[in-house]
Amino acid sequence: MTIEARHLHFHYDNETVLNDLSLSIIPGEITALVGPNGSGKSTLLKALSRILRPQSGEVLLEGKPIQSWSARAVARRLALLPQSPEAPMGLSVRDLAGYGRHPWRRAFQGSGPEDRAAVDRALGLTGMTSFADRMLGSLSGGQRQRAWIAMALSQETDVLMLDEPTSFLDMAHQVELMQLVERLNVEEGRTIVIVLHDLNQAARIAHRMVVLNQGSIAADGKPAEVMTAQMLRRVFGVESDLISDPRRGTPLCLPYAAYFSGPDLEP
Amino acid sequence: MILRESLRVLLVLVIMISIFALSLTQGAGSADATTLLEVLNGFDPRNTDHLVMRDLRVPRALAAMMVGAALGVAGALMQGVTRNPLASPTLMGLNAGAGLGLACTLVIAPGASFVALIVSAFLGAGIGVGLSLGLGLAAGGASAPLRLALAGAAVSALLGAIGSGVVIVGEIAQDVLFFTAGGVQGVGWDELGLAAPWIVIGLLIALLSSPAVSLLSLGEDVAAALGARVILTRSVAAVATLLLAGAAVAIAGQVGFIGLAAPHLARFIVGQDYRRIIPMAGLIGATLLVGADLAARTLNPPHETPVSLLTALIGAPVLIWIARRSARVL
Image (tube, rainbow over all chains, first blue to last red; front, side):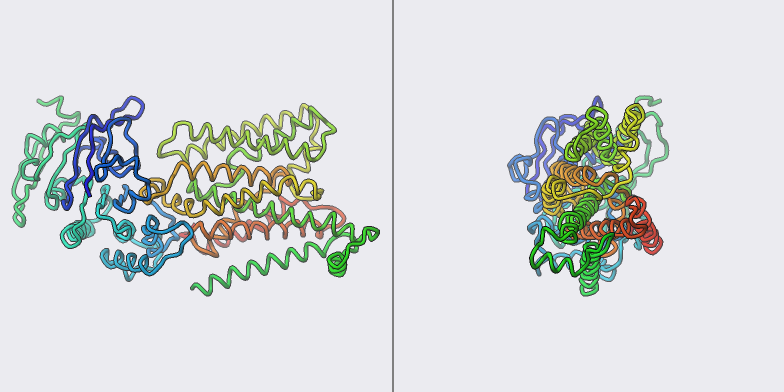
C-alpha cells in the first residue's frame, strides 16, 4: 500500500496550514509526525486519509488520486483514529469496535462471522476482551482510548493512522499504547502513521520522524538524524541537551530553556 | 439480552396497537367497538355512528399516528446528525417558520381554507429550516453542528417574534390558537391526504439513511474515516427532517416534546444504533401522540384539552425517570 502526498496546499481563510508539502509513506514502517502546535500534523493526516481535500496538490493511494477512490474503498485500506474522538457514552465497547466493520459490509447487513472474528481479534489485541460489554461511559480514559483503537483495528487495514493517541493518558497507559503500536507494526506488518506530541516517544518507536513546521517539512529521516539540538531550537524554540536512550540507543531530548515567542527572538 | 430487547419492542407494538384501537372506539358520541366492526363489515352512510367512525375517528387517529411518528423520527434524525441530545425539530426554526406562514396567510386571506393554511404552514417551515441551514452551514467546517444549533435558535426567535407581531397587528390571536395549542382535531381525510405522502416519503428517507446517521453519531471525522459520506448524509437528513416535521406541524400545529422525548425513549429500549433508534422513535412518537390525542378527547368531554399540554405531561416524567436511571446513557 503506497501513500504519496504531492505538493499539498491547504489554508483556512488567510491562515496557511499546509504549504507545498510532499511526503511519501514507506510501507511497513512506523512514521511519526511531530511538530509544534498548529504546524499542520492533524491536517496532513486528514489529507492523507481523504477526510480533507487539499486546495491544491494531491494524495496518491496506490498511485491513483485518493479523491478518485470511494470513501469506503479508502476505509478498507486505511484506518484513521482522529484526535480525542467522542462517541455516545451508552455505546458498548463491542458495538464501538463493530463500527470498524462498516466499510466491509452493506448498509443494512448484520455482522457476519468474519465481522465477529475481526472484532474479537481487535478486542484481544487491545486487551479489551473482558471489557467488551461495558459501556464507554463506565471506562477510564485509557480503556476508552483502547476501545477506539479496537474500532480502527477491526477495520483490518494495511495502514493505521493515529492522531495523538496518547494525549490525556497517564504514563502506564501511554507506554502500553506505544507497545501496542510497535506490536501491530512488527507482528502484523501494519504501516503506521502516528502524530505524537512527545518527541522522545516518537524517537523511540518510529523508523522515521517527519518534523512539520508551519505547514512544511522541516526535517525528515531516522530519529537519530532528525533529533538535533539545532532542529529543536529552530522548530520548537527550545534549547536542549541530547542523550542516548540507555535501552534502545535512540535520541532523548531534555529541553532546559524555551523562547516564548519562537526562534525569531533568539538572543 | 437480545430476547429482552425483542420483548421490549414487542411490548411497545402491543401498547401502540391497543392505544390506537382505544382511540377509535372511545370518545364523545356513541360510536364504539361494535360500530368499528360494523363499519368494517359494511359501511352504512345513513348511520351517524358509522359516519363519525369513518370521517372523524379514523382519520384523526391515523393523523395522530403519522404526526407522532414523523415528530419522533425527525427528532431522532436531528439528534443523530447534530450529536446534540437536546436537538428537536423545534430547534431548526421549523415551528416558528410554520407559525409565521400561517399568520401571514390568515392576515392576507382571512377566509383561507384549512388546506391553504396547511400549505402556507409547510412553506413557512421550509423557509425557517432553509434559513437555519443556510446560516448554520454556510461556512462548513468541524463546528457545523454547534453553529447549526445556534443558527436554528436565532432563526426560531426571529421568526417567532415576527409571527407574534403579525398575530397582534392582524388581530388573529383567536384564529391561530388551534396552531399554538396543537393537535389533530379537525383533521379529515383531505388534510391527511395532503400531509401523508410527505410524511411517508420522509419516513422512508429516514430509514434508508439510518446506517449513515449511526456513523455520524460517532463524530464527523470518525464517520468519514469509516467511509460515510458526511455532507450527503447531513443534507439528506435535513430534507427528511423538513418533510417530516414540516408536514407534522402543518396539520397538527405545535406539538411539543415528542420530537425530543421519543428518541430518548427509543434509545432506552433499543440502544445506541440509529438503524434501530429511528424506527423505534417513530413507533414511540406515534404511540405518544395517539395516546395524548385520546386523552385530549376523553379527559373533559365535550371540551378538548390542548394536546401539547398532554404530550408534555406524559413525556416529561418518563424522560426525567430515564435521565435519573441512566445519566451516563444520555
